[in-house]
Image (cartoon, rainbow, N blue to C red; front, side):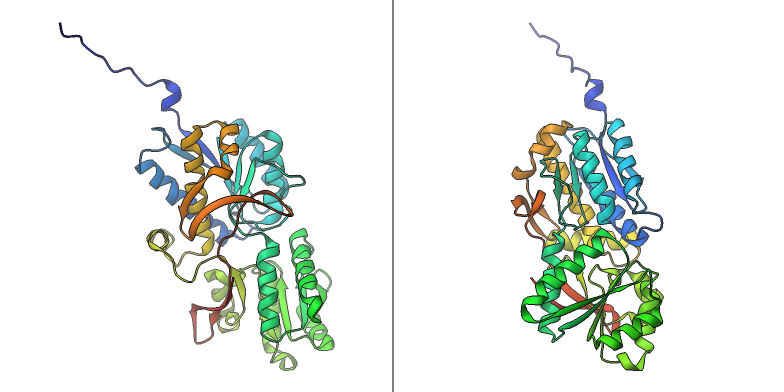
Length: 370
């Protein structure tokens, strides 16, 4: 006797989307170009995950919130997204906003994969709920200090705006350069105009000026002033936080924006996955994608792997960080515990010191790597 078999209808839960909250700076004073690149990477990866069948047959949905680099706004976005039932959070470029988001996510029990912020103390206490793709600031900025020392710079001027992030960077540079006799003098951009900055550089006989400041202002005005001051013809201008990575830097400064070393998190050559994603992002953005766009893509790749193992269960996803092993656009990604860092950390993404070639500002020169 033949028995008819009817296919059970999928439950409503299986039909629901798996939601990821995306924290992105899309309006000033956030670096909106970085936010646009970050979002492009997140969206590209979500589309590819869904084309491959989603998360256990359920579509992945991205709920985007603009942080504008504001800590309070970032924390409020985390609360809103938690109430909307997101399985996890991803993104954020600015360290001060990421720190606020990480603390709120930890308190609410929502897994957060920080894609791009580097502040070592991303949380006040160790937590299993937060992981990070970007290298810790101490790693990248020590590498930058090594570059300065290798290039013969031992008298460094730092022109900084008040910020936990900039203060942390200054401390890292000073501590790393001091054993070899290097000195760091701080110039407060809240009290000095660009002409004053030039006078201070000359008075201290600094051979390098590092801009720890927002873009376009006051960074652009300071660069122009230094480039036009004959007393400072041999002074290196650097921007370790990465402002020159973006096309807006060249659009604002032209030739003055070349030969400004900065940190970026790319290998010397991308592998097959990285090259394919880079090409797709170039088409999506209508310009060369930054490493920040690749960080966004990698964040979704990691979360998709964790979610496939645990569905939309927040506790299970957070517990998956040490077991995640995926191929990212910039190399194999695994997380571990690192001394002094209270979150699960990819140890380590590739780090480079690069600048824009004065002869061809659209081309990057690798000056140092580690």
